[in-house]
Image (cartoon, rainbow, N blue to C red; front, side, top):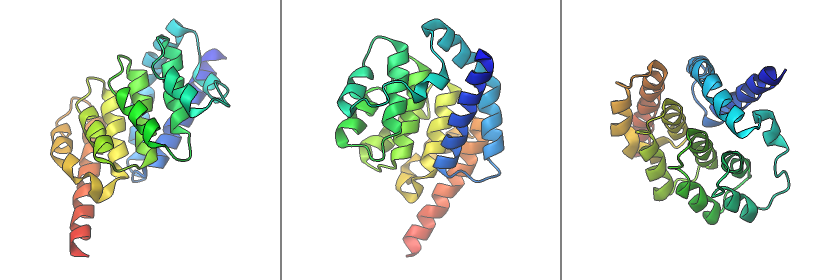
Length: 200
């Protein structure tokens, strides 16, 4: 039962993530497949270590203020940092303070936190120089899930993320086949968006 809840929780998060980024339909199945194949083990190991489950995210700090979440984002406990990033991403609009807090956590030692931070920043669609720099920096993260999430997040930025194209082209040679595939799709999308933007 615990494993089933965990898998369901991951699937829900991944589906909402790929849908939110606006990735082309043909890319989403592969994106989910890659994440499901290797993320389950990583998430399960981390969750077993800190004694919490993905399904519990929906109830954790449900009514917490942004200030509380920003403090939790710096907490020693992994569970608190992971879920604080997730909760911040659920906000309808992120304040400058929230964006700065997330950016400060973008290099957290846990890929679970970094992945949720990238998700929150991508969902915000805030096209500030700092956010784009953070997302582009995450393209070279040592963890394939973070690289894939950062690549996917940039899709929704269109021409505004054209400076990411050189790094995305490098990811076309990534060790992970799904990172390579998504990088190609996103790079092409940013190039086309840039051309359309210039022709207006």
